[in-house]
Length: 207
Image 1 (tube, rainbow, N blue to C red):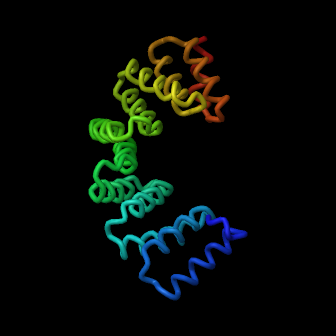
Image 2 (image 1 turned 45 degrees about the vertical axis):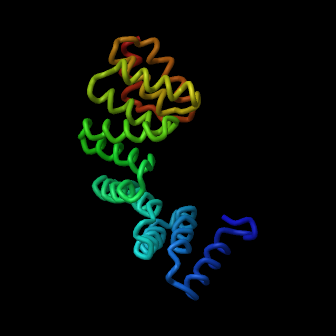
Image 3 (image 1 turned 135 degrees about the horizontal axis):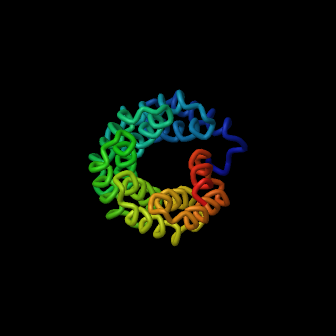
């Protein structure tokens, strides 16, 4: 939000006034969408982003935001479609490629997930969320050492990244290294990550 505004509502009102004067500016609609996201008004945000990409069909960020809104309501196919569009528009754009990987993983296509995530990390090696999702993909196919390696890379870069600690705990558990799994669970919880209670119970029974 621009500093000259006292509140988010004031900023939104100004954007809406500008759109009323000229409704052909994709950037105004995009900024309105971002402001509506900040207000958690997802319907209005979606309408704004749809107008943004209608006016500027090569606005990759707009398609990424629309994909994110699909994800919020559990529509993985919609999220995948919008992020594929964004990826096709802008070369070597890691964000939609990583989002595609996440969607493929949720849809059970581990091979496509790994391909998309590997490409995203090729373009942005420091994309921690993408690397964490790749670790999850390795876990799902039973490659626990690879999951541990990727998770440790994330933790080295960002020690307070809870999802990476959770992946580490799961992989150590499957390898029978329960003490290490317990330590990883505790670290995940310290980071504010909510570890699944069933997993915690199962781990306690092993220790």
